[in-house]
Image 1 (cartoon, one colour):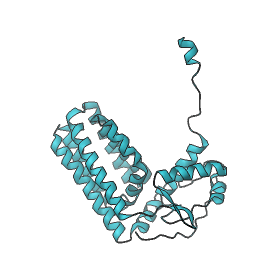
Image 2 (cartoon, rainbow, N blue to C red):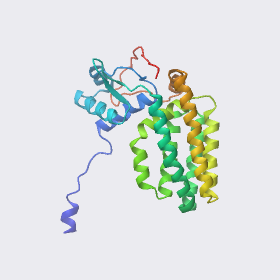
Image 3 (cartoon, helix red, strand yellow):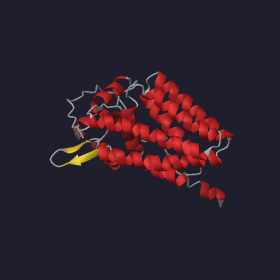
Image 4 (cartoon, rainbow, N blue to C red):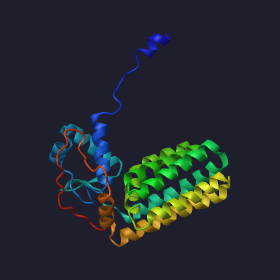
Length: 261
C-alpha cells in the first residue's frame, strides 16, 4: 500500500515561471524600479519579463492581494501609493505581535535559537555595511521568523506573513534613511540580549521600542514627502536590478508620478 501511495507524488520544478516573474516584479517595486503611482501596463511588462500576458495578469493579481499594487478608475493598475494611516496601522500590528513574540522567545527559546538569531543579526550588519538592502530585508525577515517560531508563536507568524510584502515595502523605505543601519542593528541586538538573558519583559519592551522607532522614521518620511528620494537612494545600491526572468531585455523606466500621501 505504501508503494502505491508513494507513486502518487507529483514532481514539480523548484520554481515556476509565474513564481519567478512574481519575485522579479515584487523586487522591482521594493527596490523602487517602479515608484508609487507608476502605471503597470500589461504589454510592456510582457516584453520586459519575457512571459505571456496570462502570466503577467496572474502576477499583477497576486501583487494586488499583497497590497503592493492597486486598481484605479480609468488608469488601470498602478503601484500602490504609500498611505500614512495604513503604515501606522501596520506598525501597530507589528508592535503588538513582535513584542509578544520576543517575550515568548525569551521564555521558551533554547541556545540553538539564540545562536541562529545572532547569525541573522550578523548577516544584517554585513548587508548594511555593503549597502545590500535586498539582503537586509531577507535576513531581517529570517530573524523575525526564528524569533516567532522560537517563541512558539506560529499562528502569529502566519499573520505577520500575510503582511510581509507591505512590511518589506515600508522597510525598503526606512532602511535607506540616514544612519538607520547602525540604529536598527543596535535596537535588534537589545532584543537579542534580553532573549539571551531570558528576560521576557525586557525583550518585550525592546521589541516594542524598536517598532516604535522605525514607525516614527516612516511617519516623518511620509509626512515630509521624502519617500521618493529615500527609495532612489535604496535603488542606487541594488546589485541586481534586472526584472527580466529570461532573455533579459533593457528596462526603460518611464517618468514616475509620485503622489504624496
